[in-house]
Length: 269
Image (tube, rainbow, N blue to C red):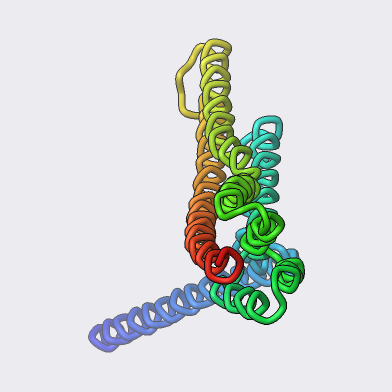
């Protein structure tokens, strides 16, 4: 009987333990499910309250980044650099257009002038030069104007007027060089002012932490960067213009020599 009671007690204990274990497991699952549900609700709530700007984070375009850096560099210091840049580009584009219009096919022009001198004389050749744009045609016309004064007079006229045309080709190059020089100087001025501002902030705060000097240092660095960028861009165009002017001048000199040969051949026989 005692064995039976003991067996029943052992069995009851095991059953009770099993039930408690199942209960604890079920409670754990319920807690886990509740935590998951709570997390899901929180996620859905955050998603519901999220703005379109928070949902999609787009990278800044180059224009937006440039505008931001321009403002961070300090508008009072960045504006003069921008004005110099615009002025430099305007002068550069004006020179590019002028030089392109001044480019002439000298061989073709010489052939036309020679044909006109052969068939129609000086007046026909002058008409050809009047109808042709560019400095070379203008030089030929000035020489033909003095066709009756001798070869030396024609040569002096061609040489003198050639110098005038070279001066016209090089017009505004000095101002372009000024923009190349002044842009970095303005940037360096902003650098000095930014450093002074940084030291003033350090003195006012009594601390040399990065957050104190960051504003002044940013102005100092950004103005220098933009000034150098402007100088590099305008300097590149300046070198292109100088090379193009040299090419036109060389063609003018070669064409002038060939023109004098025509003068000797057809006018001063």
